[in-house]
Structure formats: structure tokens, C-alpha cells
Amino acid sequence: MNKANLKILITGGAGFIGSHVVRRFVLKYPNYRVYNLDNLTYAGNLENLKDIENKPNYIFIKGNIVDASFVFEIFEKHQFDSVIHLAAESHVDRSISDPLVFVRTNVIGTMNLLNAAKELWNDDFKNKKFYHISTDEVYGSLDEIGLFTEKTSYNPNSPYSASKASSDHFVRAYGETYGLPYVITNCSNNYGPNHFPEKLIPLFINNIINKQPLPVYGDGNYTRDWLFVEDHAIAIDLVFHKGKNQETYNIGGFNEWKNIDLVKLLCKLMDQKLNRKEGESEQLITNVKDRPGHDLRYAIDANKINKELGWEPSVTFEEGLSKTVDWYLNNKEWLDNVTSGSYKEYYKKQYL
Ligand code: NAD
Ligand code: TYD
Image 1 (tube, protein in one colour):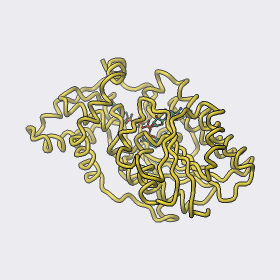
Image 2: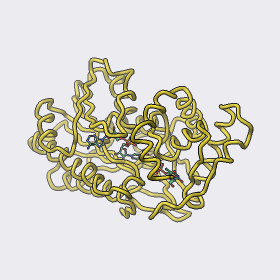
Image 3: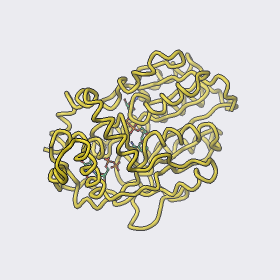
Image 4: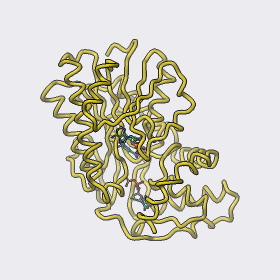
């Protein structure tokens, strides 16, 4: 890839992971033009990018990837060389109550981007790249042992993971059929600043701050492999520049936690930071009805990206979690803004 003056379309840049990727590219590569296309759904928030919004190499475009003619129009207008595609509906619980919106955004939205790239790059793919950001959840669920490798078969169990799996297949199919240069990464659970408080860690941080119940699904013996979001952004930067086309890379934190153990660690850390009595926040733990089709365990074998590209997480879980809690404690206004309005309705429907 000629990297001198790239014009990169990043989709979903106002969301959790996207905002860290946009910031990294805007600050690290002043010669690139970074276009952030985002529809600003409940999960998109331009506050996440306040610090870089006036940079000369940053352009925000508000729009919906489900709108094919709009996607074509912006490709034609801006002549992107590459796409880093993060826009998605991303929460499993929402996919259980409203699966169709996941098909629209995650499958059709991805198709629209693929079609625009294929047509407007005019089948001349020199110096072009379509980078699709996916999840480890496409592989389904693991028992107590084993890890997901890039060769593990897809076996999605939730409407969210089924929609992501479908989009991954289309990206790969466009590579095979039309020669579109693509790369896919499948990452484990992220955590960090700007995470919308519907997912486990930010929801529980918010509830601990407000001394509200901590709703642990089922017995809490479900395992996830947690990665600090900035380490994901570093991996995306590396794969974008050094990853091989037509390849998939798994990204993970080598950091498995059972939910209940993670929640106890978080309670302990927050009791210290909030000067509360030891054990106070643990009292808030409440076992609630399990999630339907709840995947038992996710764990990534990240050896390929480690060996081929030299990537590894830069922070330990304790460091990352401490930074994350500090961020939420120092950004009360952000938290209050995103938990007003429609969040209250969502919370009531999901938990009360
Ligand atoms: P998020 O929900 O925080 O953000 C998604 C962003 O996409 C939001 O800014 C939203 O406004 C935008 N968006 C949604 N629908 C859109 C549409 N139709 N048109 C334009 N923009 C739209 O999600 P996230 O957690 O940052 O995840 C980003 C990507 O990374 C997703 O593709 C997700 O599947 C993947 N991923 C997430 C995790 C994780 O732990 N969060 C792990 C692995 C992979
Ligand atoms: P989540 O953050 O939604 O990510 P994912 O389902 O994509 O892995 O959930 C992480 C784990 O925490 C998962 O096992 C479900 C569980 N969980 C709870 O126990 N309670 C909650 O309120 C939430 C949101 C999640």
C-alpha cells in the first residue's frame, strides 16, 4: 500500500472502539485524511472525539451505512483508498430483543460498503484495502478448555454474532469472487474509556458509583477474555499497515475472567478508589435471570498476530481496569449524559 496520503473511511468512529481508532489515526498520521462515517445511534457520541474534532486531517460525516445510495455518493465524492469498518449494532442483549436491526446494519450495511468499494474502485484494487472489524463471538462458545484460532469453524449463537458472522463471510466472499483486498480481525471483549454502560464493565462501574444492584446473569460462571481498548486500536493500526491481505487475525488479551471474579475485583478496586468500606460494593451483587443462549466461554489464541506482526497487549488487566475506573470517575458528565433519556427506558426493559 502506498501510505503517503491515504484517504481512509472509518465507519462507527463515534462509538467505543471506533473513537480510539479514529483518535490514533488522526494524531499518528497527520498526512492521512481520516473520514469518520457514523449515524450517531444511541451508542455513537461525538463527545468521544472532542479533543481531535478540529484537527485538519479529520472529517466527520453523519450518515447511515444501510443507505446504499448515500454510501455510494460519499465513496464517489471522497475517493477513499481504504476502509476500516467498525460501524455495527454491538450489544448481544439488544440483538435478542430486536434482531432485525442487526441484520440491517451489520449485514446490509457491510454489503453496501463492499459494493461501493468494489464498484468505485472499479475492480482496480491496487493500493486499496477493506479492513473489516469483527468479534470472537462468531466462533460460538468454548467449554472449559481450548482457544479460538483463525481456523476454528464459525458457530454463532446469538443474533448479534450471527449477523457479524454473516458480514465476515460476505467480506471473505468478495475477496474470493472479485479479488477485493480485505483483512478481517476477530477480537475478544474490549473494555476502557468511552464504553457505553450497557456492557458488563461500564454498566457495573456506573451502578457501583450510584450504589445500584449489580445484575449478574445466571451463576456468573461465564468466562470472557478481556482486552484494553487502546491495545485493540494498536492492533488495528498494525494489521492495517502490516497485515497480509485475504487473511484473518485473532486479537485477544490472554486474559480470561469468570464474570463473578471480575465483578468482585471491580468492586474491590472501586471501594478503594471511592473510599468505601472493604466489601461494601460486593453487597450490590444480585444474581438475575440468565441471558438466553448465553455463551459459556470465549478465549482467543492470539499467537498468529503475535508471531507475524509482533503485537501483544501493552497493559495488564489490573492497570487497564484501574485506568478505566479512573476515567469514569473523572468523566461523570459523560456518564450522566449517556445515561439520561433513552438509556433509562432500555434499563427498565432489560433489568427492572
Ligand atoms: P459501539 O456500539 O460502541 O459503536 C458502534 C458505532 O457504530 C456507533 O458510533 C454507532 O453510532 C455506529 N453505527 C451503528 N449503526 C450505524 C449505521 N447504520 N450507520 C452508521 N453508523 C452506525 O460498538 P463497539 O463496541 O465500538 O464495536 C465496534 C466494532 O467492533 C463492531 O463492529 C463490533 O462488532 C466489533 N467488536 C466489538 C467488541 C467489543 O468488545 N465491544 C469486541 C470485538 C469486536
Ligand atoms: P457483555 O459486556 O454484554 O459482552 P458479551 O456478551 O458480548 O460478551 O457481557 C459480558 C459478560 O457479562 C457476558 O457473559 C454476559 C454478562 N453480563 C451480566 O452478567 N450482566 C449484565 O448486566 C451484562 C450486560 C452482562
